[in-house]
Length: 391
Ligand SMILES: Cc1cc2nc3c(=O)[nH]c(=O)nc-3n(C[C@H](O)[C@H](O)[C@H](O)COP(=O)(O)OP(=O)(O)OC[C@H]3O[C@@H](n4cnc5c(N)ncnc54)[C@H](O)[C@@H]3O)c2cc1C
Image (cartoon, rainbow, N blue to C red; front, top):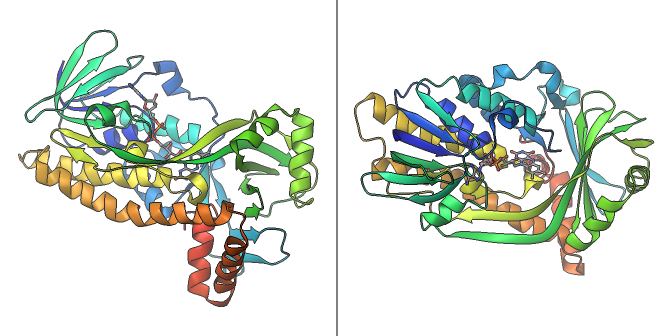
């Protein structure tokens, strides 16, 4: 019941962090409320995650990437942003130069499965599945973790990776700013009669946003974002009506559409924790930074944040230093804040700009796209912010 590190949550962030500790020599407990069967074979949840090259490199080092079959990776070769129903679009196209894809999509359940399998390879890791954590007491020497079944564990360092609504964050007294966007994102896999040509689209129609994420074959993940009250209507439509309505919204771009999966609805809330660490306690993943998905940085931040903490903890443990030292945790916080804060703020502003319907915001949107068309560096920055690929 006594460990060096306790990780709360065996999602992508918790598992990536645990995999990052594989050479630390520490005794680790990973606690997860879902049971083992759900962790070994996670259900499809509609999310298609756009991965940056930096993320893939870390996944590769941690033994996660090798567990993902090539057939489960969908390359994106170009990105296009459309504002309203204006005929002009902003393009970011690598194809003429035949370069590397600008992003790669992998389903979230595939990532979860691979990250969990990699974390299980970390020596001296005890998995406690089907075990919700009900309370955490951080301490200057040891931190305590209470489980629903009455057990109490202790560790030098507790790392919370228990979602953006992290109860552990609150129990450790860390405040977070939360922003409810008042919108719901509906995701579903669809097949279509026309090719997507491996181009991702972000279409900012007035009142709703529609994204096309090109998957292998004649299939795409269609991401519809709209105000909560309208989302209910779209979720309740029959499969045929939904497919027809999406096809109409896209103006026939992908031909005839067919719904190929369940629809999953995600209410959109952005979260940024005021601190990422305290005495004997740290946050990783969405518990630290919960992004709006439009700029596709959430999981990428999970991985880079988990790596930034695991690297420091491993180095300290291997060199006989205090791996929960305040200085070490503050250095992790500073690195992760520097990487995430500007993009978090920029994403919040962009979402406001692209969902408000005033004359001023419409003009501002036009100016942003115009700037993108005229200046190539601006074009790259804007398409990478507004479209899915994590360039
Ligand atoms: C529609 C959508 C599309 C997205 N697209 C992208 C994208 O293209 N690119 C990108 O980078 N990111 C994307 N994201 C974001 C990405 O999915 C998240 O950032 C990432 O999954 C968060 O991982 P996590 O491990 O922090 O949290 P989670 O995945 O929420 O995992 C948390 C884990 O903790 C467990 N847990 C919770 N409470 C307890 C408890 N009390 N006790 C024990 N266990 C507990 C849960 O069961 C779960 O397993 C998208 C998100 C959405 C919603």
